[in-house]
Length: 105
Image (cartoon, helix red, strand yellow):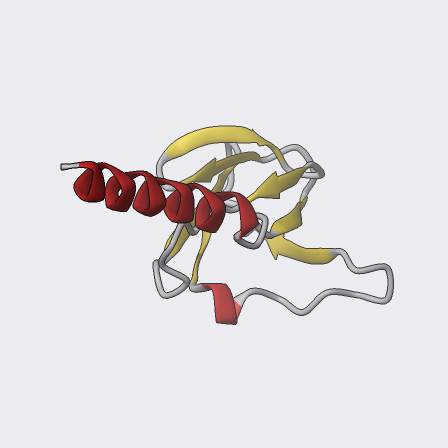
């Protein structure tokens, strides 16, 4: 019985360490042209273009994260990224992506 409790405690400790020791969520600065578009990540409002956003991949780096920008009078702009598909970091270590939005005719 004590052996099972010890195994359970060890498993919980290892799981906690794996979660705490994992890599942090990557961040990306998202801009829009024109400025001021609303940014949605996985369908939820996340903020305004010009801000920096954390992308939550969890334990699956192959998970696709859907990003959409919306602004009245413009066609929505969108992207889907796996972790490996994110734009490369610039010289300051910041990932950036600017979306050119097309005016609705």
